[in-house]
Length: 217
Image 1 (spheres, helix red, strand yellow):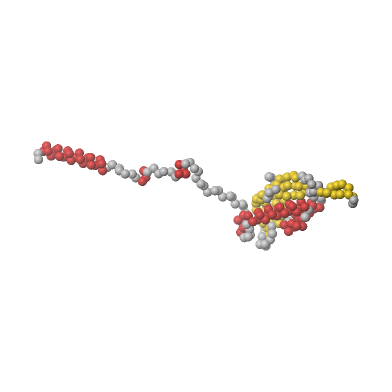
Image 2 (cartoon, helix red, strand yellow; image 1 turned 90 degrees about the vertical axis):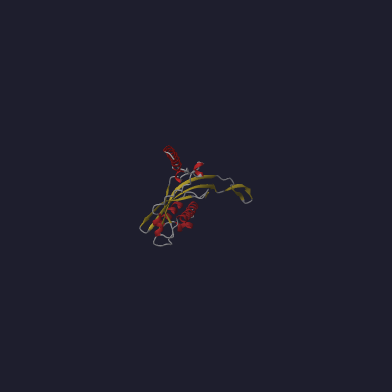
């Protein structure tokens, strides 16, 4: 083999090596980090992601009240407070406070009784609630060993005339009486704060109404 042939062979070998290196040096296939991941269907469709609902803020002193009265439950309390509200309002309207005396503090009972006794005319209208009153705890407070809860009540009342006897035609025994059949209904919306109080010294002590005042509707 002469020199010329060797030179040609070397050139060919160099060309082959260069081509082989260029092939082996290329990036083939794909890398995981280079993949374009598809978005979840919710994002592609533009749907909103479900978020955890925000928790309602706790009332100040609620946890303290539960620690001092282990039997306290705000849902049960509101149900009983709403029941007391309806019964006291009805009893006050009819002038029958003795039926709810166990739900009132002594001071409130005396004030309500004086107001009933001071009425200039007898009750001539029936009172009823259009719907169940709405009740929400407004404030929880303490004074020594006594707990106080102020509840905001929203209600719609209906007043309906009570049928009254009216004179009819003459009879053998004199003028006959018959009931008035037509009635008039009126409606009134009320918003009030009622404060209930309980001694924490006795676990079974009842919640008594100690104060009432008007509230904004």
